[in-house]
Length: 133
Image (cartoon, rainbow, N blue to C red; front, top):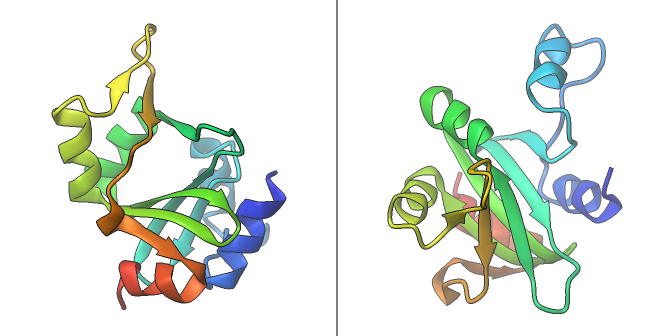
């Protein structure tokens, strides 16, 4: 588990289901990594890059599942307080237009810089503003 992802999720009020929650087993079966959270705005996928030249991977099958079943936002972090937020529709537009291409195996979308300034945020309050109510 990435400590910065957990720190960030906590700072914006995002949570994972508790182990005693009835959906916990299903949630863990679908989402093995700890990058997936519930939030007042809907479902969140939170990824972090610590690379000098940031990049992120996004599993195609997970995005297809989310597109078919949930409202969600994608949060791409470069630290526990800075990153970009994308709506479900924006993610779909980037993947359809191939601005976010699939890797050679066709399983992962590769997201590279530059990303739009209009999606950028600084701090939890900036992220909350982008996520909406």
